[in-house]
Length: 239
Image 1 (cartoon, rainbow, N blue to C red):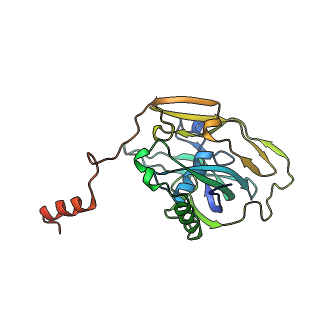
Image 2: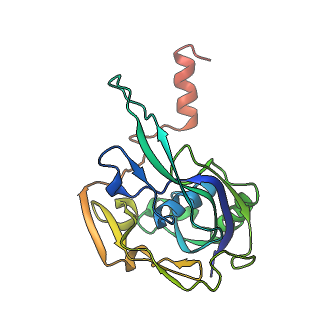
C-alpha cells in the first residue's frame, strides 16, 4: 500500500465505548476498537491538516478480556456518583494505515509533499508518536512501536470468523467530506483469524446525520502570525 505505515499499539486497559451504554452514566467497551479510535491513535502518532489518515486493517494479538471497575466520575454538581465502567484488559493491536491528501483544504495544497510526510510519519512511529497515545479514553495509556503487520503469533490465528454485530465505524467531519454536516457511520464487522479489514469511510452504507456543522476555517481574519503575537505581548508588557 502506498504511504503505508505499520505499528503495534498496546496497553494495560482500553475503553472503546459503546455509545448505547453511556446514557445512564455507565460505560461498556466494544470488544475491539472502532475505526475512529484507531484513526485517533494514528493521528496522535502524526497529524497534519493536509492529510487524511486511512486505517486499512488491524490484527488483534491478545485474547479479548474485560474487567469492570467502580469509577467516581467528576460531578460538577457536587454529588458522589459511582459508575461502573467495563474495560478491555491487556490489549495489543497491530495496525496498518496510510494517508491521502485532503482535497477539501485547497489552502494547504502547497504542503502536499508525499515523500516528506511519509518519512516524518515513519520517524514518528519509531519514537512512539508525537502526542500521548490513548486507547479510547484519557485514563487508558497506550504505547506505540514499529512492527511488521502479520508477523508474530496472535491468539486468534486460525480461529475462524467472529461476527461482532453492529458497531460505530467513525465520524464524518465537514472538513473531510465537504458536506456541512456531522455524520456517524455504522457497520457490521467480521474478525477473520484475528484480522479486521476496515472499509474506507466513503464505502460505508449506513450513515446517519447527527447535526448541521460548518467546517472551521483559518486565515488572516482569525489567525495571528508568530510575529504579531510576539508584538502584542511586547505592547502589553509581558516580554
